[in-house]
Structures are given as structure tokens and as C-alpha cells.
Length: 111
Image (cartoon, rainbow, N blue to C red; front, top):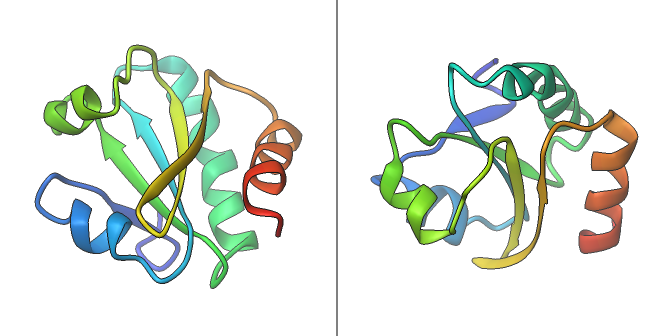
């Protein structure tokens, strides 16, 4: 994970990084121990680079930010959610190939 393409999301910076973002935000809810999360991580990083300037990518470790996981009813990880102007647009649960995430972004953001 590189600092220039992804942001570490926390309860403390959620309002600034996600709700107040001038561009749509893709939030990756994950955990260190989650095998499927580790499989999806390079895909999410690649999408962050591909859509840099169009989408912000925020990674939220659910073990360190349980209140955010509870707030958005995250029951399974990885869960990827899209937000625009602070509003949740949709979510994708589970590991998937890059093409599935591409369609998820296109369907929800019309990029």
C-alpha cells in the first residue's frame, strides 16, 4: 500500500477523508488476518492508481475501527463500499477479480 494512492481510514479521519471528500470514495473494509482481503488488496491498490484523481481509496482495518464496521453493518470482509458526497452508493462483499470491481465502480459512479 502506498501513501500516494490510498488513505488509511479511521474513526478520527472518516469525516474528512470520506464524508468531506470532493471526489467519490471507495472504502475497503479489511483485516490483517483475512486471506481474501489480502487477495483483494493488490486489486484495490491497482484501481487506486488507475482512478487516481477520480476516486479516492480509503482502507479501513475493521479490527482497529470496529465502530465504523458496526456503523456500516460490515458482517463479512472484504467489503468494498462506494461513497459520493458522503452518501453510500453500494457495496461489494467478498473477493473478486478486478473486472468485477471495475463493473461495480462503473455501475455506481458512471465514470
